[in-house]
Image 1: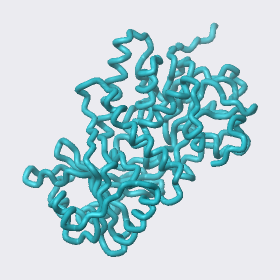
Image 2: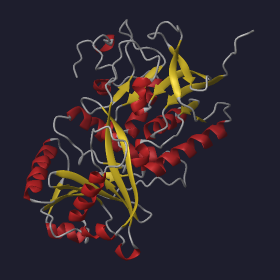
Image 3: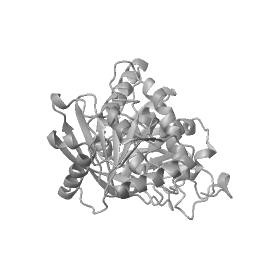
Image 4: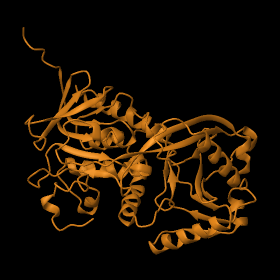
Length: 410
């Protein structure tokens, strides 16, 4: 009895993961002329589904994350062109209104003042406002506010709308080009395929699907977030220390008589805890987000209470909104809070052909989509930008030493 030969599909670039990072990479690769297939059993239903979509490199600056700041700034600068590359008429929720940063009590005022000092040291533009000036911009601001700042460079996009737009653009572009490769395969990827099945440092040639089919590709991009470490066939010695960081996020409808609740994204610190309120074009707002590592995938009642309580300090009218949705999702965190992005060194120090990793984006997944897509596009064209070598996915792997970065320190 002859063995069953698995069905083989072919494409130039296979992207494992259909969140906003994977979709953005796929779109940029397709724009560069590659035939692309995205592999994901449920595209855009993970962290992308929950994300608020703030493009906020200035507001989200954290201490001792200088290299990451340069990456986030570069990505924010690319977002207008990235959105503009999509076909006309596809809604994305891209909004260039400024961000207002508000403090609750005096301790919050001091913390935000200290943060502004650091932001100014990095050459970032943060304007201090009086409470009266802030309330002139956003009349719904509450009476308990202790300080206010305006960040002109921090914007927003709607991740759900953007993901849908990217999917539609990928399908439409593939149809125009008449490619026979599937734009999307709604299956789980279980393993990487190698030129030498006994050597995980040999060229990656494709992907094995959960249903037994194989997708053969010249390049495979692994962008499936927390699922990455469980993928079989990753190079021996590659350590990808990704952990789930859960966040609770709320969506609420603003009654007609209260619109607009706010025209700007509101970021605040209340009793030392961060909270944000992001307006959407459809009359809803997004309030988020907690950050917890309790391995509880469900929505936290305490988290919901905290978000509503603190959001009401910033905008008291939040208490009059209709609660539509409470969502919890896990973000893929890394030890240094920076992404795992790039090629992987093999035993000989040379990059393993056919493999690119793009995961571990933590709280910056939406913001970093534009630069991640560009970096991967360059790698597909055999261009390595040394400015981003600090984010290589093999930086936590002591036995893997890229030959071309000898002496390079992170």
